[in-house]
Length: 142
Image (cartoon, rainbow, N blue to C red; front, side, top):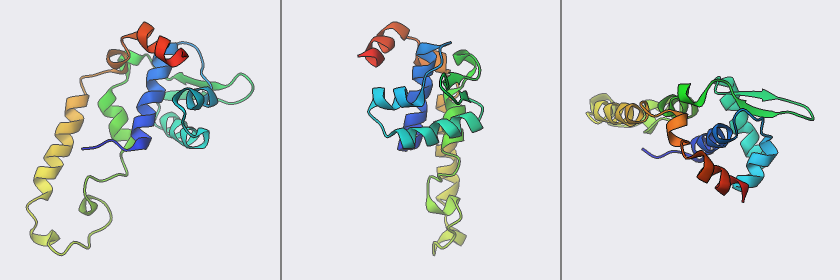
């Protein structure tokens, strides 16, 4: 499996928030730090808020904070939530036009592989992957 940019950016946002917790961090600051489009990152932040991973506050002192402690945010859950609409192969989605679909034996192994991918991420929390707070903070501050 491969993470799309949207999911990659979501994980980066969460890692920055974990390092800076409990401070509120502006989306514009996160975008500038990672040299990403602020518009695109706003969409990522909106989805993270919709899924309950972050709290978004608007206004002059607005920004993002983690919705719960980093130790309670599963990386597998984040990846599942962000990739929900992105099937591994076309036939898992709405496109059912594949000629061999009725007799294809590939679907079951691919479903297993997808679930194995998520299951491998499930034991890791945001706190685990952002555990090196000081080195990460140094890198995010430069």
